[in-house]
Length: 194
Image 1 (cartoon, one colour):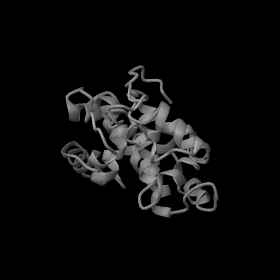
Image 2 (cartoon, rainbow, N blue to C red):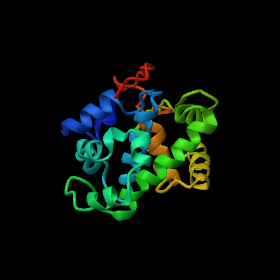
Image 3 (cartoon, rainbow, N blue to C red):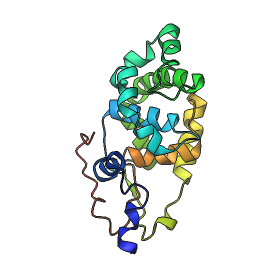
C-alpha cells in the first residue's frame, strides 16, 4: 500500500521507528544535536543506519554526550582506548574523526556564531521539502548536499561526502523527505526534538 511506503525502511525496529517518527526530517536548531547527528552519519559510512542507531547510546557515552568542546579536547589516548570498545564501530579513522570534526565545528561556530547558522546558510534559512509521493522519488544527493560537502571538506572535515551530507540534512530537518502522506511529516520547529 503506497500510503505506508514511508515506513518501509524502519518498520518493525522500535529504535528506527522512534527515530523516523520523532527526529528524522524534524527541524532542530541545537548545535550539540547537530554535531551528534553529524558524528552518527559519519560513523555510518559503508554501514547500515540501523547498526549505527543501535549503537547510539554507546556513542553518546564514549563521546561526552557529543559536547563539542569536550570532543574537541579528547586526547589521543582517550580516542585510542575507544578502539577496544565493542559498543562502537572500531574504525580508527572514524573514531578520530569525531575530534577532528569537533575542532572544525568550533571554528565554524566562531565564524558563523553557531553550527546551526552555518548549516542553514546553505538554504538561506528555508527548509527544503520535496513533497515526494513515493520512496523511489527521494534522492540520495542534491545540489545543496554537494555544496555543503565541498565546503565541509575544504574546512577539514572527514567523512562528509555528498550522500552523507544529504542524509545529514535530513537528520537535522533542513531537508524534509517524509512522503506527502506520511503522518509524521510535520516539521515541529522547536529545536528540541532530540
